Length: 109
Image (cartoon, rainbow, N blue to C red; front, side, top):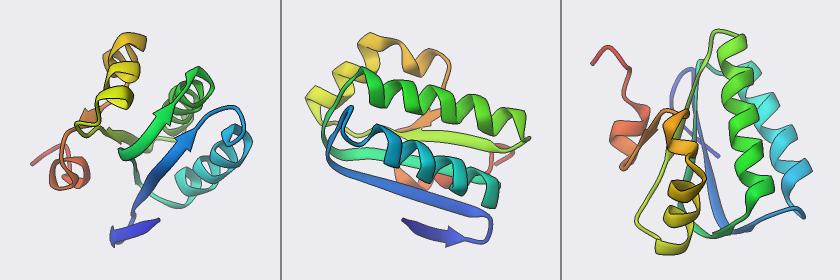
């Protein structure tokens, strides 16, 4: 995890994210959302994600909104992960960006 500025945390996801990482990721995102104003989950370096991981993202987005926080997904060009996210329609409801710069940008900018 990196903190590009105060109140902003970026959780970088590498490797595979599925049922085996669901609980750990869910707990991590819950804590990070409580402690920051904007949380970005960067999946641009992830090799694989499944529906349980996508559910964690949707839950984190809902939780952030309920606390008045912002949640954003940074999606790269990795074909398998991008397609999974696209086909699941997660991007229809979760704020997202293609680059780190855009992901951490305040919405007013």
